[in-house]
Image (cartoon, rainbow, N blue to C red; front, side, top):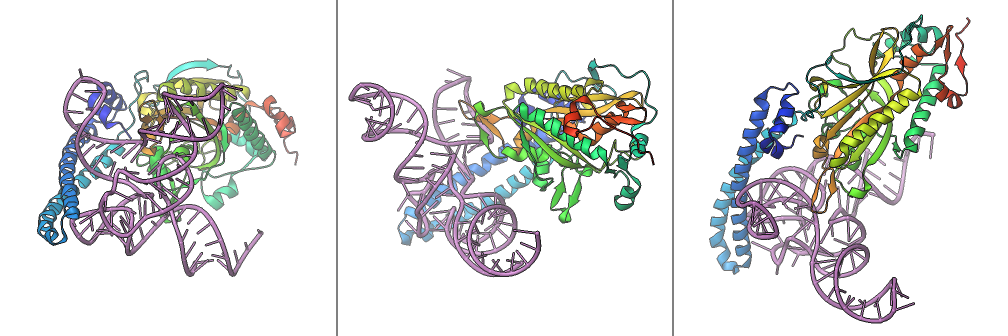
Length: 418
RNA sequence: GGAGGGGUGACCGAGCGGCCGAAGGUGCUCGCCUGCUAAGCGAGUAGGGGGUUACCACCUCCUCGAGGGUUCAAAUCCCUCCCCCUCCGCCA
């Protein structure tokens, strides 16, 4: 949720919204509704105040004098009721419009769309020669991924990971979790089905509703990332400043409809409806969130780098930030079969956008204020396997990355001979 | 699934339709006192929204799980929902 007061007073705030290529209509509308709502609130409060006075007087009056004043009170009640109804209607409209206004982009976020991200740095060397097989063909040859029957039972964009790839997947999960826990992230296996409210408060609804699966007749929704349940971990709380930052590492299965991606990335497991992911989430003080964002990015780089994958860091442009992020970095890993970098992880600073919806605050010397929330991909397991399958082919065998060997229990997987 | 009980401030816990934003206790803060500590004594101590204001501050509304309703007036009565607990059943 945007900060209406800042929207009113701080021109830079509004500029940040408009840089996301949102037309000015809703912003003007929300400002008008906000002003109207505050005026009406004053009216209601004045009437309510009068009513409280009269009610107390009736309470103190002698019983035989009470009826005389009740007429007066009743009239006031009617006036109050209609004023309240008007206020309620205004508030509902205000909220509805405000929910659709995105978090402003930071001033240093580059202008533009999907292809306008700014490459911050490039780490590692892309291999000169692409492997003979792309990840899908290799996984198929190795018996790592089964798609035919998965598609029969569940539809397109579903697959089973199989055989030794499962062991590699588990090793990867364990390796990443161990690293994060070592850095003080609290590991969490959260619910993957949540109520609408959790989706909204995490910043996903209403804007990204079309990407989400509904279950139980619409009562529950399958999360597209553990970020959703992690964000609710401190819902409605006021945290001590000294306890921040609070960092969590959630591991969950993620479900995405991938609406609007027809025909893209259809082979293998690059883009599927269901995958496992380790997600970092941080609650931090408002003045610390820039540093926290860089920290989370550094952790992501350490993980990708630790797997020996060549990558680059991209600062995402305004039009590609999504509704909730003020600033976002993607790590893109070189995908040899396509000869280009593709997204592997992502980390965002939401500032107070979802904290305002969640009512998660920090105690300050005087009062409290909304804290900042950040999230970042610890490891998208399936997506990472894709990169490993392409970068670690050797004479038709799969070579386990050094980092994972001890946890996997083997160094390489030979192609099936049969 | 069936039958009951309950959700009150940082925490525990009382609360007759009006004198209740809420007794009492714990904790916390400040002060006093006592070689130190502990104890004791005194005072203070909920959050949030809106408005006024240069500032200190002031005014006002909301909040007793959530949302509705009854009433001049609701923590207190009624309804719906959420959550927790106990018993029974069922499944492991």
